[in-house]
Image (cartoon, rainbow, N blue to C red; front, side, top):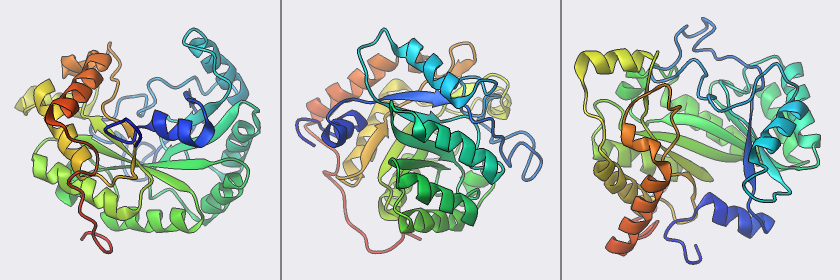
Length: 311
């Protein structure tokens, strides 16, 4: 962890690649079984029209064109030589295998791409997809990001996740068997979940063998069913102080080797209803860092190893 109080993605990338890598958000033109009628038509309750890819490029462009366009947008930050090709929008293994092979191979072949990161659902990882991911992983590192969000089945039903916990477990086993790294998403602040329930989800991710975790603040976005539910019920939305406290508790029980890919998240400003304090992302991250120092605590301080899966 060097001087960091948690194992950040930037720190892990510098250890592995000797430099910081920036993510290029790409759109593979995929849809989602929660939208095309297979499981539903409205997506998860919190999902906007962009399918969690609100910052991704247009699918009308080729992957190579999207990479070039995204690189231009990052050009003002600092000189960067290598990138993470991040297939973000919707479910990026939910398409014919020929299409997936085309878009992923095109990204992997790009000389400036060091890593492929593919966001998907654990119920969209059939044998052909796993074989393709294995092949790609022989060329360049492949990360698969899975939207678990919560280990609690009642909450999963409420948010319309669309698959049981056993499907996540099976997907993790298959991905680990082919040597593909995994990043698991957890949402903090889902309606009805207590802090202890959220910590249970982090413990579950610990035990799953995941390589990384994304802690995502729940955003209420215009046009989602969650927004309608919020307007009807006015359910409690985490304050900045509550969120910082919760994130620190999550870090304290997280596996020491678990790479922390995210501590909060961005919500499109034109869609965000609540919490509005999340718009100041830098302030949120600085507050977390400051509080870690004040409490003199760090990732894994309260981690307790477990044997086998949590059930």
